[in-house]
Length: 103
Picture (cartoon, rainbow, N blue to C red):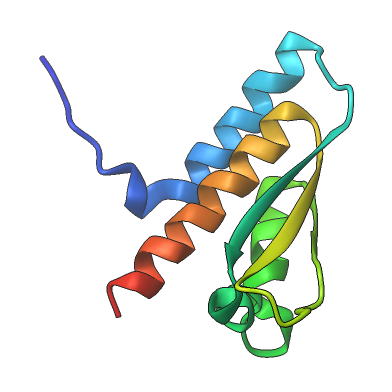
């Protein structure tokens, strides 16, 4: 019997499961990754009072720093954590970007 699950509806559970699996791998070394977003998405990614970016931090376990806008077309986001935390944060950022793009 095959079951199909829409993981977009369950991303918090998927991220939590990924974090649990990663701790079993014992690769808990911290690293940093930078990604860029269009400058006009910065405020939307942060959310009202930082609520959206804080949710991504809480759910992924990663530290996320959004560089101040410097008048450029893109802004830099630095994600720090284990590889799994970084992947989870990137996934959540992508999900928000997709949701924002469909509004």
